[in-house]
Length: 339
Length: 293
Image (cartoon, each protein chain N blue to C red):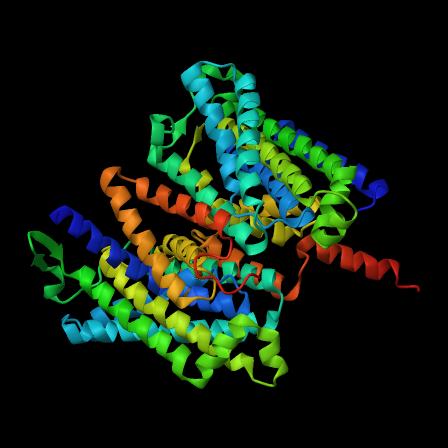
């Protein structure tokens, strides 16, 4: 997609600038508030990328991706709090558990395909949400959320003054997931994923087992989602049932469509934009011109979901491919101008 | 025995509400292959229209004003569904994933719009006083509202089945569910059937929205979301495109949910999901499924 030659320096430059800004004197990113917002946004960018691996690259429309994100989050918290496990080991344990869970649920769901697959994954996701929210087994603390014991985390992750380290942690995880996704999609298995999306019948005629590769894609993206969930636990300080809700998966779908599927950076950009907009549109609308508008216009405009939903509808109808799709179309036009 | 009867009737009443949400979803998916995430918005819009009739237009609740609320809820939601079909769905002809995605967008916008106008707190929908009463059957005391849900759902079920069975448009819809390309190839205007299905589905969801506001003691912009998921589950268990299948699945899920919840609070939701997974894994087309897109 984006040519390696041009994109590598650009992406590295952007990452380095984001990594330095919190430490470089007085700028918006040196404030803890925006650092926290951006840390969450980076993690949603990474999560959107893992969803893109399923939806964009492999062509699997799953509505249960939040399950694996929440599983990574909650298993880490439970291992740290209840079993006194070192936090790095707990994260590894959570990734392992989530991969197993994904192999089981994904294996069952992949007996179906298309919309039915979407529904089965939605059902598994809902089951996960019920388990977390109703506190079956007494591990998850139900609707109140599950705070991670701060004494068991390193000191530099605790407290408002240390938000910049959480920010760096989130950025680091995003970079790691980005390279992992890059490696996966450019590997030979990644080629098979893309082939499955484009023509499944042909893949099986070539002698490859489609379900085995779909399951591989499903488990890989779930394992990465678990890592992101564990990081989100450290960044936000506690697990919450809302991370297991179907809303999260739908938000991921919006992020990928917004940024554009199958381009990697599109999903990341979409995730970051969506996350920042949905937290910051509230602040922007407060105390500005919106308040002077009549309520029947100003009220909905103050809701981030209204603006995001409208943008989303317009993108699906008139600009499929999202931001990255538009970029590539413009670039293609530019490069072919002389011909 | 009295508890058993109470749970059973409550379960059937809940099933009736599920059916109102699911029937339209099922027809729309069966005919057009559109997974309609905006169906929850139809429900919410219906509930708000009913609320408007019952509070602003007729401030004194009687049986007639409640009937007017239900009718208004159904019609407004049906018209909204029609509008959405004409403005959005039609333009994405045969792009099934995009159609589903665009309905996700519509549901977000409608929730935010209603939330921006009316706030997210639940509002009470006034009902005639006799809704609060209970009837005694044997030694069981059963709140009367459950019978209202069942009656309304039964009337709509019969109406829908009659439209499908005895009218020309119903014939086109039934044929379209089985093989849409063949129907168009014969020169029959399927688009009209699309619009009809959206109106009927929106109408049922809108009526359901008014009744659900009574059942859950309030109207809120967020009510559509959680009922939509149950609607999906019922449709998938019953089989896409089959009204009778939706009715059976709605009863099955409503009753199971209530009994499971009686023994362990919160277990109902979990059991419903297990039923869904079990049905899909053994019979992916659902109980009475006709289509396998």
